[in-house]
Length: 421
Image 1 (tube, rainbow, N blue to C red):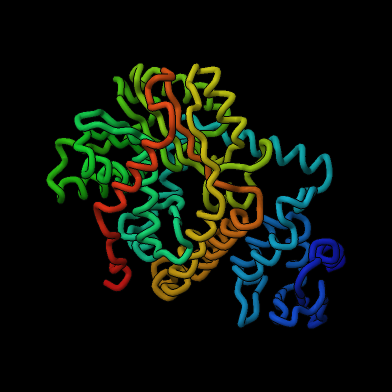
Image 2: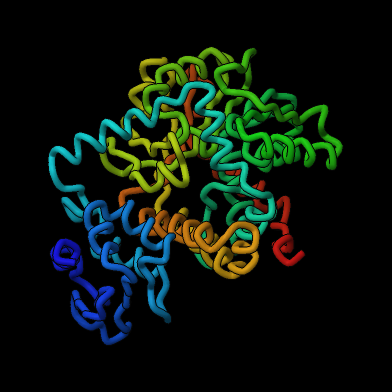
């Protein structure tokens, strides 16, 4: 316990944390908060403290998943992870930085190797992440299955409203015209592709590597009678041919790996028509390039990496793509993840029945840890607009604001009812 004790004494500056070791001894950190009681964590075996201390992100996640670390009511693991990040915000230099040159070097090498995503590995990683049971996603996502940041114009809005507003926000940046050909790379469950066709009468090709996503997307297109105009294919983006007026990617860059950025941007340049627009929405770092933590790489997004803005812009420049618009979206994903977490907890029994208790705790830790990173850590969402020709869009951003306002008046968000079925 001495190593964990030493670490927590340095970390906890605001609020109070109590850790009860396996032998019943209580360690206290911080100072009492008159508005909030202490967060109490109980360790259930003698090795849990060292397992957490030697690699806090991996160790804490595994200890929670395995029941070796328990957060006592009325708090839960979300409270604990938000508390930890609140005490080590990104704005504080050195916060939560891994210690030791050797450990950092080994971690950096492992992280870089994990980003080498050749075709077979990319498909395997996509299936690991997205080929979970359909029912799981119904339980915590909106009805349109938008598994990316929602756009909260008002934090009080529902998830359904925020996801609908996200699609309008994206569409407004595409400056679409009827009859255009759109490529949606990493199309998810087809929601954005169907939205763009519905409001602009465009032809859309969506590609992704998770078989169930493609199957589900094609089912949706067939039910709506638009299969001739909105098509979904199980295909690697590297195998797409032809040219497109618009290219969109939402939540794709995170799965590429930095070694593949040069080839990705060069291929996008080939696929994009001379007067075309390419749009990318992704999770991103506020600071310089970094690493994906081992727990996330191992359990949630193998091969994944959240890029710094500099990494994307540098490769886009080399491919002669003009970065015409850049938006840093703060807090939106924190609100999204908070709602996903609440819906996950509300359906605990069904998720445990679908998988098991360990999976449920893993999913809790993932959503809560991600929220903490976007609320207090160094993560934001980037929205980037790329051009091949500087005259491909109007000189000012007015067209975006005007179109987004028009789109918001066209439809109401669907009710979230699938979870109750």
